[in-house]
Image 1 (spheres, rainbow, N blue to C red):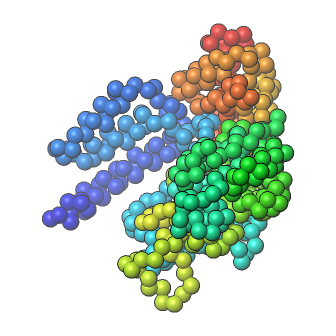
Image 2 (tube, rainbow, N blue to C red):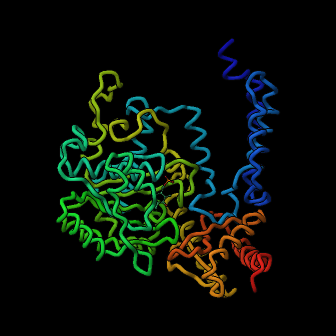
Image 3 (spheres, rainbow, N blue to C red):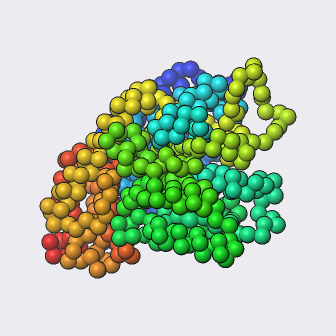
Length: 478
Ligand SMILES: *Cc1c(COP(=O)(O)O)cnc(C)c1O
């Protein structure tokens, strides 16, 4: 029977599920025992994949075991408490369950009427987060995206549609003025990608210089806007960043807001990582000014610790998503029995899509706002501890973020371009921790971020020791 081929026979399915869940639970509870990063041997990894040739169906349980073991062996374990990496979280358990439930129901989010509970849940989250970020209750709209890149692209498309009334109909064709957008030189590169895919081109992105504290130089921003206006360009949007990807700088959002008001520009805030501080009553003022934005990118799959992928795009221009993305069709199901509803496909780059917001919904159900506030506070405190211990061990800190991100060097070797990469390489190769290199002022610095809620003082102490060991091993004076 074809049906039982794809569903599997009941017995086999139950056996596989029980076995797999035990194995996954083993991974989840014992991640800390694995090397954080694998030794990369491309041939071996490719062979491990290609031994599955799909011509013959082998024992399913054995195949699954082999695949899970290969993933354990050939993956950087961002769930590991000594992963001090790039905003990638350990996935909380609510988020994992939500992804599973979502797959079993195979929820289709394109039209409200196919998934009314799911659509209303996402709408509720959009409203709640709009309020958290300081938008007025009557002017909050938004949509769940696959990630910050899609959310930033959504922002640019909304800005273009807002500033250029017939952009949706005629695109850039026939426009006398070339649209330009502004962000800092430290902004995320997804903004450049957004410019390319939106058709304005990468040359439309003005990368404004940063001050010594790595925040956008807003005086330079204003001069650049004036220069563009006088040269016949069409300034469209300024994107401030709340928590840059490298050093976690938070741009002067009130100053950018004032410039956007003065020149009638769309003000977007890329708060992919740093937006999380809005959930803590004592930290939320760090991103003050975000409430003045037209739109916000906030990645849920970063600091809010759900599995990838999940991001939130918010806007206070309640008609703009519809204007940008709504399409009339004769075939999409419509039946909402007269309720005022939003069909997600009219708000999004995506059409058919999964219940992306569920991971956030279930996390809030399981842990509440308080659970998030406590976790964020814990990670900030671990970040402070890491900074303190690095200083005590003689390292020099190059960034000044209150977020739990630290970029650091050794003052004796900071001009040696090989130093940071050598130390980083040693740490990563050891499998005992994962850090990265980020250039500050063009000089490579080491970068560590408390991106995992399971990181404790123990992993921090071990990292400090490992860094000292790395210095000696790489031939530098301790
Ligand atoms: C991570 C990040 C992005 C990109 O988000 P994805 O979820 O990886 O697509 C954009 N902006 C900032 C500031 C980021 O940190």
